[in-house]
Amino acid sequence: MTILIVGGGPNGLMLACELRLSGVPAIVLEQLPERSNQPKANGMVGQVVRLMDHRGLHERVGAPVPMRVPRFMFGALPLELDRLADNPITILPVPQRRLEQMLEERALELGAEIRRGHEVISFEQDETQVVVQVRGPEGEYEMRTPFLVGADGAASVVRKEAGIDFPGVTNVDTVTRSAHVSLPDGAVVDGALDVPGFGRIGNTAFTRTERGVFVYSQFEPGRPMINTTEWSSSEPADDVPMTVAELRASIHRVLGADVPIGEPEHPGPNLLRRLAGRNTRIAERFRAGRVFLVGDAAHVHSAMGGPGLNLGLQDVANLGWKLAAAVKGWAPDGLLDTYESERRPLAERVVMHSMAQSALVAPGPEVTALRELFEELLRDESTLRHVAETMAGSDVRYLSGDHPLVGRFLPDIPLADGRIAELMRSGRPVLLDFAGVDVPEGWRDRVDVVAVRSPAAPAGAVLVRPDGYVAWAGDDVHNGLPESLAMWFGTPKHMAVTP
Ligand SMILES: Cc1cc2nc3c(=O)[nH]c(=O)nc-3n(C[C@H](O)[C@H](O)[C@H](O)COP(=O)(O)OP(=O)(O)OC[C@H]3O[C@@H](n4cnc5c(N)ncnc54)[C@H](O)[C@@H]3O)c2cc1C
Image: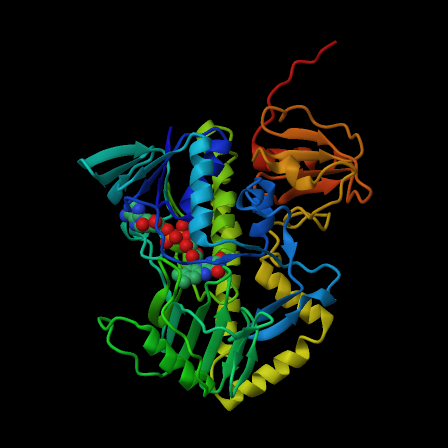
């Protein structure tokens, strides 16, 4: 009963970890013979950081506890998050290649198999299984699995083979250029880029002008990166290689000033990319029978605000335990369908806010006026919180309940001893017992019960799903808890009563 995962990017590798934590065999089929070294994400933003902390993965990339950022950006407008007592935006700066390396090490440690150089070319499914055709280094072969998961990125073969459409829009107006570069001594002053004739530009700050957007960032010390976006610029044909000189000319058009960038000094691989247009799409369905889509295979959008990993890795956490429950035979009816019903609204929110941000950085006096209005609105604390929660992915509740925590990611409740994230390492459902409640017995094989003490207990008990979301919270365990346990974790087992 091995689950096959197509794609060994961050989402495929994380799913292998989640399945193995739940005790289910998992094989990752990855077409590339070696881990990709191409620069992609520079970090994670939002609730995913707390998920990584729950799994002990946060500290594996050298960051002790989730870090709340005092400032962030929305469509190149500043979000002064330190004005919020309950600032929801946490970040984890980590290059994607390091993240993938860490996830691969963890997946192997947990007993997953990763087959590199194995490309999935097609599959067929019936009521009981999926039969998958794979092209490996020794030729083609066939594999059978109860469930196939496409974590194979934006051009997903799994999505196409499953006959799932990818509706959305392709914006053809923009050209984005990105590159690692070198800068002369003295170009960076107090962490900001000093541009003669323009002024100082902060690290990672988006600068919008009437001609485009400019971003200077230095995620890794000594490795500056520049990014420009222009509207209606006549880009060279696709087969003309991008160069640092082309980026220099683009910077001049956007800022109306020169930045003396040179070839990068880092041995690389270095980013040097020209991207014409932008895709914003959500798969028509996230499931076709025994086949599921996660991450970029299910949704693509602009990278503004870095929402990709927040969305994808939480897709994975949502699906992993549900697939494991189905394989182990205790999944309640309809559990697998909740993957799409819970995750699609989040994908729609990301599409909405990333498109809104793209609109806010476009050129034109009307946009300038809109930005002025937005800036005024963001002075209001509740608007600021609303935008921040949207970017953190904490604005959607999976389900509603009597208690305000139900359907939300477990907050970082302070404990008398230790941290709450440390109780979530196993990837199993946890019933946090704050008040010595009378816990129902029938789910003990699937649900861990942990007695905890807190100076700020939100309820007598809190039932937390493996993905970190609260399924039930309350003081009276006879009021809704058994129903919630049955809804998520199946029928209770008869427990022998000791006299
Ligand atoms: C320049 C750039 C910057 C970004 N910055 C950020 C950021 O700062 N923060 C953020 O959160 N997100 C960012 N993103 C988005 C983030 O990188 C993606 O969301 C993430 O890579 C998606 O992971 P994935 O595992 O779904 O897909 P991918 O990373 O695309 O991995 C898919 C894997 O599947 C393999 N594959 C494909 N087809 C097959 C097949 N038929 N058989 C076997 N294997 C197959 C591929 O080789 C690949 O390894 C950025 C993206 C880019 C391009």
